[in-house]
Image (cartoon, rainbow, N blue to C red; front, side, top):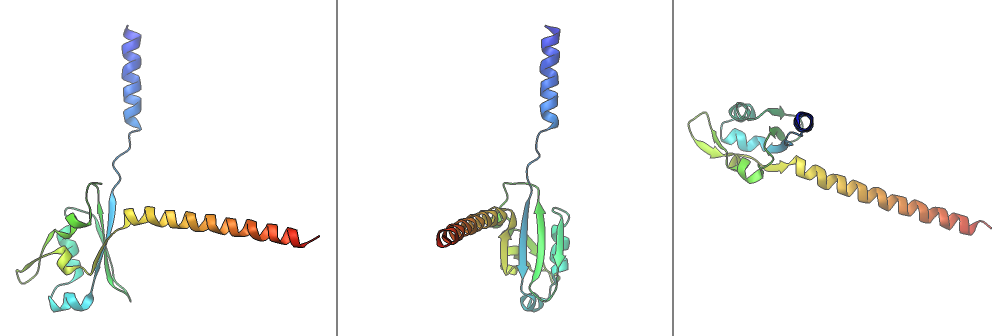
Length: 140
C-alpha cells in the first residue's frame, strides 16, 4: 500500500513538473505620429503607463510608430486592450483604441500566417510534381 501511495505521489509530482504555462499573447499597436503630436503626447509616455502591468517594447523608424505589448493571459483580446485608459500629460484621458491607429493580435495572426505558408508550400509541391510529370511525358 505504501508503494502504491508513493508511486501515485511520484507520478503526480512528475506530471506537474512538465505542466505548460499558459501561452502569453503579443499585441502590436500602431500609432500615427501626426495624431499623437496633435494630442501633445508621445508613444514613450503611453508605454510607460502600460509597462507596470505588461512588458512593452517601442519601435520608431521610417514607418508607423509601433508598440509591442506582451500579455501573460490568453483570455485577453484586442477589445480588452483597446479599452485600457491612457492619461495624457495635460490631464485628459483616452482609451488606447482612440489613440491607436491599429491594434493587432500577433499570436492569432501567427497561426493564420503559418496556415497560409503551409498551403502555399503545398501548392508549390503540386506544381513541381505536375512539371516533372509533364517533362517526363514529353521526353520519349
